[in-house]
Length: 180
Image (cartoon, rainbow, N blue to C red; front, side):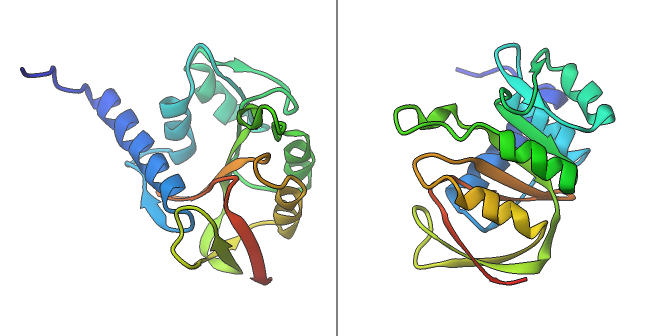
């Protein structure tokens, strides 16, 4: 039995979803997204009529609105998109849902633009990581403090995006900042 071929948009969405899945499956390892605007592409793969999002970026909000998802304030949105993390973004991130012990899946997913392979040295341990995994991320140090406030099983799944590279940090991953 043959299946119909993917349209170019469907193939791009599938490839984006697979890259995100592998990024979360192997925390700290870099996965590659398909060509195009990475944050908009991630939105295209994850958002639909039944999901919600927040972004402080007006241009990105216009692109994400095409998905049919509803834009909500940061304390109510399921997906958060930040092209960069500054003081205003940190204030919004602090409002993102972390779930509860009964419903940890009510936590938000954060998609954050940053620089990979430079900045703070992170040591990651936990499920999906044999021993430990190391990576470098140039992002606001306060981001790690905010993440540490909600121990597993609560907390956010985080995607760190640099160009077409993405690193996943599931909420189950323990993160240790070695140096800033």
